[in-house]
Length: 103
Image 1: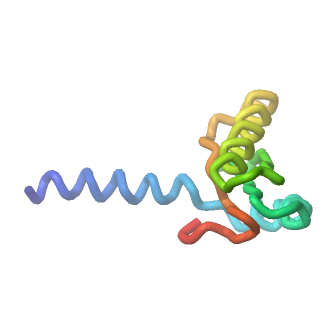
Image 2: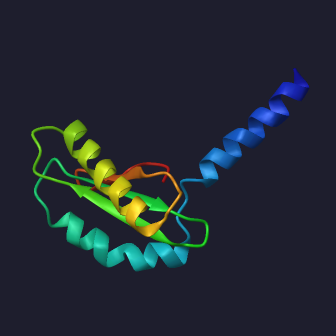
């Protein structure tokens, strides 16, 4: 059992690290996030951030529910990833103007 917990702990720690945003990158995102915050309700902001700090974002706003806004933000992020050669995963950072807990 002990040998199972060590690899599991490593996987959990690595997966948590993959959604952290480097401080320098976070400050560069501030104007992009401020623009997003001005959109109407039912909005989402998704990002993909490389370890070197390169990033892309996508917005979804004005949708009838949060799920659709999230899907649109992730789609826009994916499109930006392709055009900029970013391999990091997209994830929703903000939902309806509030930063998601733990990210």
